[in-house]
Image 1: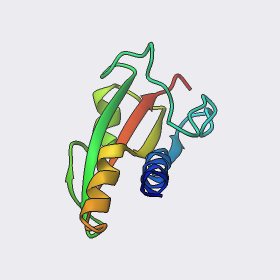
Image 2 (image 1 turned 180 degrees about the vertical axis):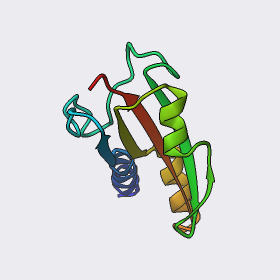
Image 3 (image 1 turned 180 degrees about the horizontal axis):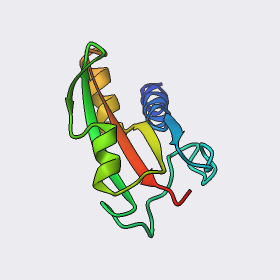
Amino acid sequence: MKKLLLFGFGFALVLQSCMVEQFSVNTTTESFQNGGKLFGESTKGLKKNVDYTKSTTIFVLGVNIESDYEINEMAKKIGAEHYTIETKRYLIGNLCRYFTGSLVDAKRVTVFKREE
C-alpha cells in the first residue's frame, strides 16, 4: 500500500511539472504550433541566447520576488521582435511548492525567437 501511495504521489508530481502556457507576441506562429503541449517546446537544435533564452522566476505567496529578466529584456537579449513566451512549472519548483505548503513557487520562462 505504501508503494502504491508513493507511486501515486510521484506520478502526480511529475504530471504537475508538465503544466505549460504559451503566448505569441507579434508573430503569425500560434501557441503550441511547434508542439510542446505537454513538456514544452523543444530547444534541441536551437542556440541558447541566439534562438531562445530562459529565466527562472521565484514567487513567495504569489508575489514575484526574484526574476532573472523581464520579458522585454529577454526578447531584446536575443534580438527578437517576433517571439513566443513559454511559461512552465518544473520539478524543482513543484518540490519547493509542496515542501513549503505553497508559500514558495518557481516557474521557468522561455522566450523563443520567431521569424514572423
